[in-house]
Length: 185
Image (cartoon, rainbow, N blue to C red; front, side, top):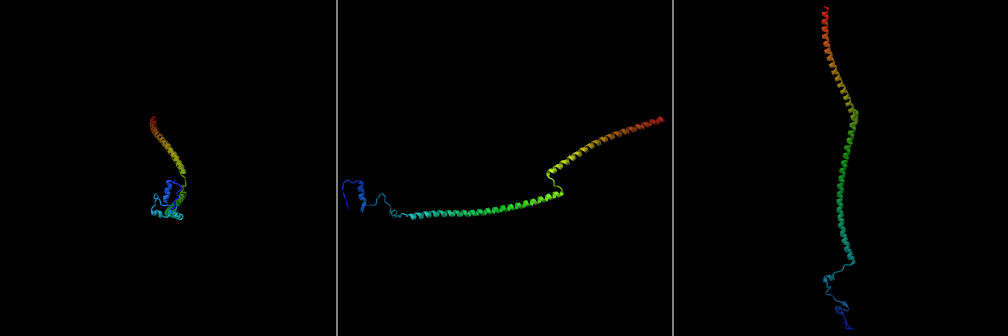
């Protein structure tokens, strides 16, 4: 080791550096930042290894997403199957309703034909009008009946009076005949 002392003015930092120096200016290990042997021997990963780790991490995430999507796909297939069953059920219900509607239409047509042949082809308004007319006729006949009844009662009264009068006249005739006989005799 060579030592050159040019100036006795050396600083404290220089002296510390000089003490630590080994093999021509290579500092020795510092006790302040001392690492364990495992840490010192630990291999620093290369850029390729870092990329590989990132790739594996993303690959694992994507595999999880794929599994989730496959589960969703299975669930969606089940949903589709359920919806198909419901659609089939609705289609059958619709077909049945259409058949019933067709049956009702047929029955309605038969009823209309029956009404035509029976003369019942009138609408409800026509029926109401006919009922009104019949009621008016009935009212007229009721009034005529009451008039006839009143007239009949008047005729009976008149007849009774004429019968009474007739009886009185007969009595008078008998009386006059008796007087005439007396007068002739």
